[in-house]
Length: 289
Image (cartoon, rainbow, N blue to C red):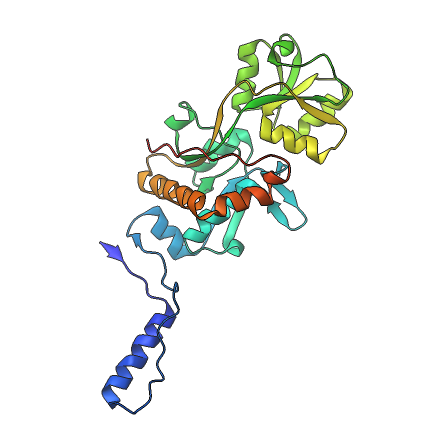
């Protein structure tokens, strides 16, 4: 059963037509049809989409320290992940002003979803099988890859092979941290990637390693200090985290993503944020598992 919610314009127009019919033909037609596109979205009763649309607000977890993707600035949080969140909220009929942004670091993404502290997480969030045991994922909406950030004058580290036995900074609970252990590096872990920069500056670590797009943002924010080296050595499909087994919501978000690819809003969001530093690449097809 579907619930149809008519906007006030449509109800007003219907009332005007009824009054005109009762009064007979007055010789003039002052009634106007509802504005095109004013009809609201329809959602199945009992779905997360209906609940969020009715509430008129959504809580989204994102990073606050990731240049290009999620960064707290003077005017609020901004970046590509933020823009993706706005696209999803808009399809629910929720304005940007009614989005609550919650800082979500790598280690607390799953707990925030499981505890209901956020409705979705869009936070450079790699989809993997282990995480899919506790949360669901829409997407992927972007394919990143793990890479290496070093001081601008470093000529010794050129690939992941050069990290073996070396102290390398990453963050707790991230897939890059697990990969560093796997390749034989010595992970030095903190809670946010921005906290890795001072250890890199003072020589406590020889590199920072995480997704290439995150490192590119850090390098761009600190021009002349750092550089990204080597080719990406993993695939990191970024997804949108949501409650486990909420299949309807997951499939709906996948629909929204594909619509954004087709109507150009995805590319527009990219060009306004990460696209100022990184080239646009065609987005991956969402995995409708």
